[in-house]
Amino acid sequence: MRHGKNAIRYPLGSPSSLAVSREPGLGLGELADFSAPGNPYFPTAELFDELAGQLRALLRSHPGDPALVADQLATVLKLNPRTLTVGNGTTELLTWIDHLLVDSSVAVPVPTSGRWIDQPLETGKRVDMFPLREAENFELRVEAYVEFIRQRGSRAAVLCNPNNPDGGYLPRREVLRFMDQLADLDLVVIDESFIDFVELERNASVALEATVRPNVIVVRSLGKTLGLNGVRLGYQVSNPALSQKIGATLPKRNLNCLAETIVFMLTEHWGEYAESLKLVVRDRFMMSAELGRFPELTVYSSQASFLLIRLPPGVNCGELAAYLLSEHNILVRECGTRIGMTGGFIRVSVRPEDDVDLLVEGLRGFARSGSAVELVAQADERAFG
Image (cartoon, rainbow, N blue to C red):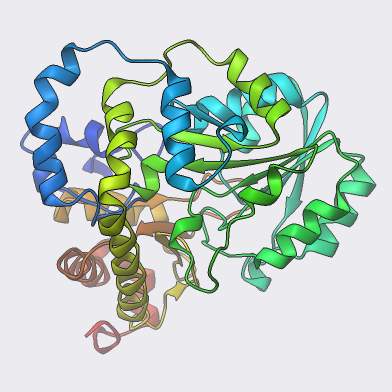
C-alpha cells in the first residue's frame, strides 16, 4: 500500500476496523486497531473459548427478556434492579433519552462524545456548546459550566466523565456538586462509559447517587469496558420512575443472545475483569511515557482507555492516519472533525506493549517520510530515537 494521495481514505474520516479489514489483502488479524477504545485484556482467552463453544447455539437462539438481563446485571453491580435498564449500546439509550426527556435545549461541553451533540440536533433541539479550552488542557470547571448553563437557559445538561476524546477526569465530589447545583433542570446526564478505567480514586461512579435524584441519569458502556465493542451493550441507572419510563419505550428484545450470555457470565469472571482493568491502567502509563519521548507531540493525561495526542503545527491528522494505515496497518482515530477541536489531533486507544512498539515505529516512519516535512523541520531524527 502507498500513502499520500493514493492512501486508503474514507468519507467519514476514521473507519471501523471491520470496514478496513474488507480492503484487499488486509484482514482483521493483521490490523493494529488503535481507533476503538476498549479493554484488550478482557474477555480472557479462556472466556473467548467458552463463548466460541456456544457460538452456533447462540446464533440460532432467540433473545430473552431484557428485564431478566437487567436484573442479573443489577445483581452483579449491587444495584436495585428497578433503577437499571439495559440497551443495545449506549447509542440506543441516549437516542431514547433525547426523545423522551430532552424537551427544547441541552448543554454539552465540547469537545466530547459526538452523539451527545448530533442526536439532539437531529431532533431539532438547541444544543448549547460549552467550549473546553485547549490552552487549559480541555479541563472542565464546574462553576464555569454551570454559569454557562444558567446564562443560556438550558433545560438539560450532559457531562462525560472521563471525557472523550481527551480522557480528562472530574473528581467524584465535583460531579456530585454539579448534580446538586442543577437539581432544578429537567435532566442531567452523566456519561460514565469509561469510568471503570479511572485509577485516581476508588468508587469513582455516581450511579448510586443517581438512583435517589429526580433528574439524573448515569449512562455506562459495557461493550467498551469489557473489550467487546462488537457486542452492543450499555445500561442506564436512574431513579425507578425514570428507569421504568425508559425501559417501557425501548424496543422489545433489544439485546442479542451474545450480549445476554455475557451478562450472565460476568459473576463467574468478575475477578478476571477486575484484573484486566489494572493491566489497562499499567499500559496507559507505559504508553503515555513511550509516546512522550516524541518531544513535538503533546500527550494529554487520561483516565480512560485512550490517549489524545496533539500533533505539531502544520502536520495534518488525516495524512498521518492515512500513512499509518497504508504503510503499517495501524488504525487511529482522527479528531479533526470534532466540534471544539482543530485538525491537529488524533486519539489512540491503550494497547499492549507490542502494539505500542508498532505505533512508535509508524510515527518514526512518518517523521522520515515526505509526508512529514513540517515535523522533520521541527525535530531531527534523534528526537524520535
